[in-house]
Image (tube, one colour):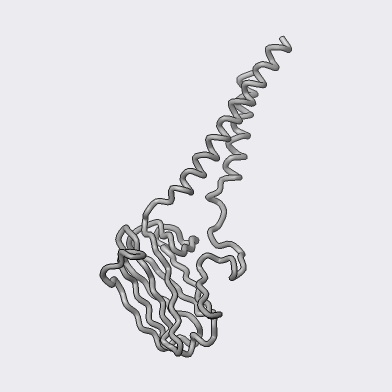
Length: 184
């Protein structure tokens, strides 16, 4: 009886591990229209990717960056017209109405390949990354960045998933024990 419960518990843990939502990649293979890291202004599109290889060499982030400190970023200029105009990139502490001091400012004129990249060191908190294509008309994109702010939604989803898996194991063990009692 205990042996069967143990097997059922191991099976439940394996199923829970395989279905764990953390194994799903953040970006995956999505179209540009549904990619949360793409900004579109008057038909011109840019894509932001951020990386922290010292913490997770495989992970790609967009606006929610899990650790403070060194972060590498890549801005893809999807629209070819943007590749021929100067691009001003500015990172400002705060977001929305609470913008304060400029943390970093990059002015790029040589990006014919459509890629602008760099690195920044940011402390925990909220920032806004402004991308401005200095053409006529000027094109402006914003990315709100959250550094190490803790994703409560993801934590709740993971906790709920494991709670449901645990309750199912208890339910199946209870059903099994009752069935064994009826058999004896």
